[in-house]
Image (tube, rainbow, N blue to C red):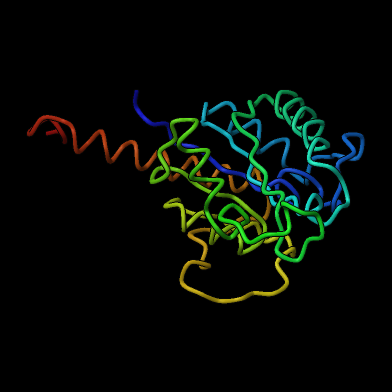
Length: 207
């Protein structure tokens, strides 16, 4: 089966208003222009996968089971926006945590790419044709480490600005709808270039 391109999305500050350590579905709300962005991506039929660091588990702020209600509510919000949540992958670890089994270094906490690699293997995704959209440079780096292109939302949530070659975004946008337009435009250009390359010799052009 052919691999599918995907758009990986950070959760808090990208799809949702950032409410730190929130697992109450009643407090989950769309970030500005996120409803429109999800609608645009859903209409295009692209696979959508949320990738989120949830260190509240390691910090003892909420149990791992609490994230199931978050996933259920997030899926409903995607449906309400005309999109489908194809996957929800969370890292519950943190090296400075206090809960045994979760207070560890891991391969899945962004900016490491473990969750993207897991999602690609389980969902049949083409990482080289995919994008990661997030609001901080750890998202950008995680996308690049997985082999994706990365887009940074300029919404003021990045505060450290640690530099590095993997932390340079391929594109920027002010909100998720603008990001969706950019990603889909790039996808359209890539599809046209691929079709042109596959066309029989002499078929392209006019005259």
